Image (spheres, rainbow, N blue to C red):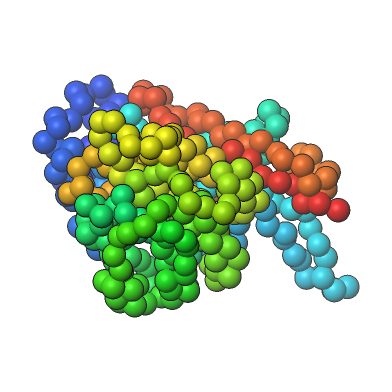
Length: 355
């Protein structure tokens, strides 16, 4: 009997050019994704679906595969020897419907740094512990969306693995640390129960505080999730401050954007969707726009699964200069023949080590 993921199709159907799955199946696939989040995502490899199937791990050890630039240390008979730096890039691949594509191999990827192709020497697709900061918008503009947003955050916490850790930052007129890093999902849920939406929107301050907390994270893989309706009107830090901080940090940023329909009340609200998209994509993350509040919990689960089903590509930069300059990264695909156009998400670059 052929096995296939919940809500999805085997690669054979895709390669044979079968018709696009009807909308009903895609909707059922979304519902199945939530169930899969609680079943440990045990889905056959080399398939793709709305359920975000998991591909098998192939190489790197869990504790060394996620930081942007890793210093490899070797012990020798004469002591400790410092080896070359290795740059590691988290990569997400999606199909035309925005569904995760898993099961690709190392030879399906190409990595370029400053337009020069690099040799991939490490490849992994395993689920590793993550340190995640949730940045939660509690400003007055979220009042009518607050309860659904809180449910989305709770759903996100519920998909945690035992070794994951979370911190919680909330913001309105100012940003504050609601909870430092903790593995206790119950503690975070309790924190969210006693909050309310009011005041203005210090979103940049919230992101800055969240990025600052990542310095104390225990896990090598780090991510921030912001839940907001976009826009900023009350921060001490600027957009340029956040862009610079994101470039300097080894943190993927994801966003759930709950944007108002129709006319925007302020220029900040109008610019919110584009701003969040630019910030997330520069880190290799994505912004998920939510028009229907009932979709929020499912979207939160989808982001959690995406974080746990990424490829990690490692290469030793051909440019060995320790000049502290910005290096551009571009990941391209050599997909198996017969596949539809696939989209790749990865960080846009990193700062080289200094002297």
